[in-house]
Image 1: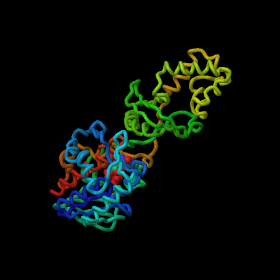
Image 2: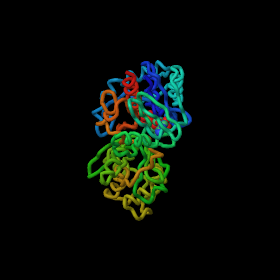
Image 3: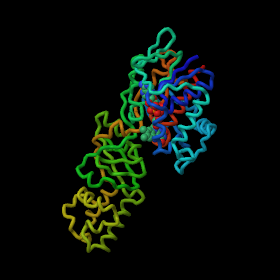
Image 4: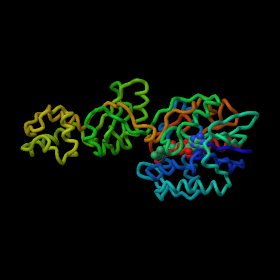
Length: 406
Ligand SMILES: Cc1cc2nc3c(=O)[nH]c(=O)nc-3n(C[C@H](O)[C@H](O)[C@H](O)COP(=O)(O)OP(=O)(O)OC[C@H]3O[C@@H](n4cnc5c(N)ncnc54)[C@H](O)[C@@H]3O)c2cc1C
């Protein structure tokens, strides 16, 4: 039996290996000049390939519960074993993120590529599949001037995130032409643009904080970690984490705010006491000078403006309780309206994709076209930041590869 794997990313590589090990003849068709380019960029070049706290709660998608069984086929333990057998010794950080012990994403790609080679899986690179046709039990895999044939196809061309690494949404068109419905894709795990004219002045400031996404006065997600102000707004791991829900709400027409807490380990009242003491000790300094050493200097003037102080020359000893609380409120609850997000080029993951209700849940075979399977980010599944997206690629790639080979 001939299986064509279209897209040599994380999902495609594991699907090809598993199908080949089960006896199928497998060819990978990849549009880039080599497979797995995106893997090299993952985890800041270290590849956070799974997470010890794997849980279905870390995944999103319109019918995600439909495909939960995919994780029973190939979950955390099998993933760790699979990579250990290929030579990857895991390094687990304090939060449960798993990396290769070499802390090199290239290690993950190398061991997958060596296995592909060892198993004599054919790789056809620089081959961009433009169309897939199914007729009389055979698939035609077509680019401009060449056609290949296969009995079964596993389509794993990824989503639209980071198109410079290969995946630009072409797979949706291929699937649509075969009758599949696409849930409108939007970037997830992406930086947020914020309303405000002062971001150029505070760009580059980093701090460990807490951020919440708020809509209709309700907090929809809270995250901690390193936050970074940028020229366009805000970035950093907690921002990527909240971005999916924020963008989803904005797409529904809701107004979304992010609220930043720069002192997450200090209660509001305690922060008030700290500032009151500080201002009584160095109250001979003006407002701006009395905050030097407490927060980043570039932030002081902007934060005071935002807190409503027109006169920054006032001596800090003259501040009353209400005024000190104005500063506390900015430091603990600075609220910004989200007015956009960065482009696909900067996004790490795609939300949306092939509608899961049109896919058989246990095999990931199409309900529309027999012998056509899907895996990876192309499907309407996206995970939180932390190794969950690659885990989905491994779990779904394994499932499609194994089931297709039967
Ligand atoms: C910068 C960055 C960092 C990330 N870090 C992490 C991380 O640390 N941990 C984590 O879990 N996730 C991470 N992710 C997300 C993760 O990389 C993806 O979710 C995962 O790679 C998706 O795998 P995939 O095989 O479905 O798609 P992809 O990896 O995108 O692979 C799809 C492949 O199909 C090929 N292709 C596309 N169209 C065609 C066509 N028409 N014909 C032939 N070939 C085609 C592409 O060139 C590509 O090689 C990161 C993503 C980015 C961009």
